[in-house]
Length: 76
Length: 141
Image 1 (cartoon, each protein chain N blue to C red):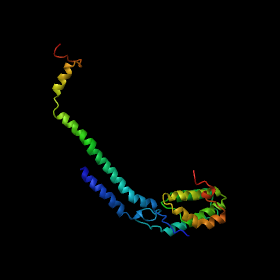
Image 2 (cartoon, chains in turn green, red):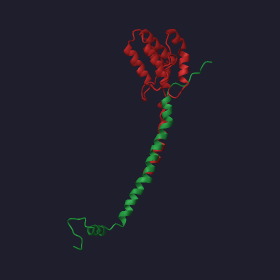
Image 3 (cartoon, rainbow over the protein chains, first blue to last red):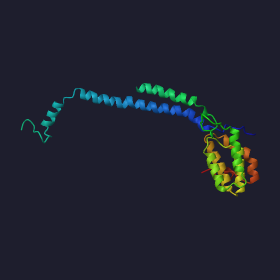
Image 4 (tube, rainbow over the protein chains, first blue to last red):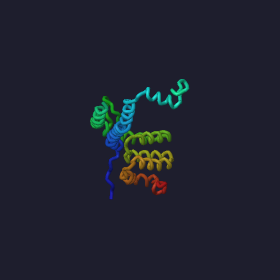
């Protein structure tokens, strides 16, 4: 039984033509998914935290805790 | 802005691959806008002639094979026949068997190519007394 001649040229080109668009799409999807599930929530969390942030109140709390050298707690 | 980029690039990448004709053209041709594209037959006969040179030296044999293996194709039986005869002229049995191993590897996942090549080369292999890697048991690790 004699074997027929198979396709012997352009095998890589054929494979790439199929897989390369898929690869690029998947990579792009992964990047977009990461952006919207990780970086945006993180940025939002920071924004929310600092929206109601009172720097002076935080400073006074730290001052009372006695961690500064340049300024003493109000008691002393 | 990112959504626009995504839409553009996804469709752009696909249309790029579709509009480029050189993807399915003979591998050895570069994508020139000028210049003639070499046909498969011209490519094959060029390589058959290369290996048919009577005073081909060992370096030229190795160089030819390495260049040939670099292309996106499995060499035709007639090119391999010419290369195997060159190995015979150079008394290089090792390279002859290595050529068979190389084309089997070039076929990659396409398991129907190598048996076809051996079938076509059988007369030459018998005439020149070249054993296949399978006959020698060196095809298994």
